[in-house]
Image 1 (cartoon, rainbow, N blue to C red):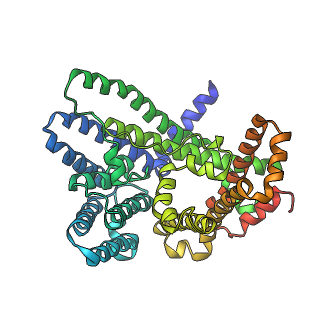
Image 2: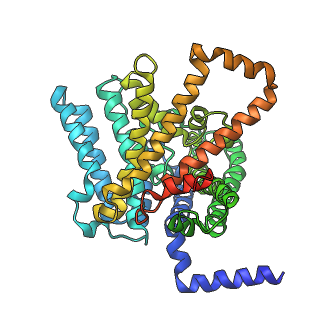
Image 3: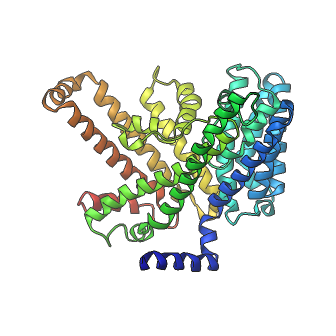
Length: 437
């Protein structure tokens, strides 16, 4: 009991210092404003049906203004209006070129906007806008490609703005494209009959519980996990034992999953309250038996986007499949580099620091290629048959899960290396993990 009281006293003291606010500002403000937005949407559900999409757009913009700044909310709205107009109203190559020019401008916004516009209400303004534009840009690319290259039918302006600015997924995903969000619309909170009302009301306890669960996961992981990260990176793992280094790699993986899935819990619960069954972002990734399966279970919406808008256009499995896998994972690494650059700038995040994300992407790509070769190369059939005949299926599954978990955990190390640490550090950590140093 005394331990619990000491913890409460410490957290209360931490709160008075403002350090707690600095650590949790972005996520907690996102959850707070999201809950407020959900309440407003429920309250507005009795209004005429033609108003409801615009109310959702307006309340999303209001939440973005509260979490970020009114100026950036205005810029987000203006950009979305212009992009939709160009895509739908400007024909031919001119429209396509103008659409991609707008996407390039969104990618380069830190160099185009005055720095004072990136100062806002949250203490993590740079992180907020970096996360948001990373996700927002992918949605906009999807809409341009769907309309200009794939001739998918147009979506109305209110559908496009809802998908583009939808606050539950605006900050950190899931990455719902306009087509995906439109397909996930469900009845509620606007209902027409008592049966629909009862059906919607039955979902609220689940949404509230999942919202609280997501908030709790993020806070607990932030307080208790990853405490040794800075020390291990700064010393290349020499201050801990080899066994502790392996446990630390697993903890790095686990803590990221807990925090990221906590964001998703909050996003999914808020979206359901507002009438959208958005897709899940995680499906028990620790059960994966290969790197490929891991990427079907981890950050699912991003994996689907990479498949639909990079891997398949490159040729998919039809030609140069292994090269396409590497290029897709390289694109994933560069996407994360872009996000870090928006937070730290080129001075704080020089090209040498990009190595971490790029190595992480290439490791995952090579892991997936290795698994494909093991499963498909005719020359390895005798080895595969030997494994099938000598090792029971249940044991093979457990071994595959352990190897996939270990590989993914190791691959996360360069992903998390701080930009002020020598990038060669993760090689030294790898060497120490395998008793080579």
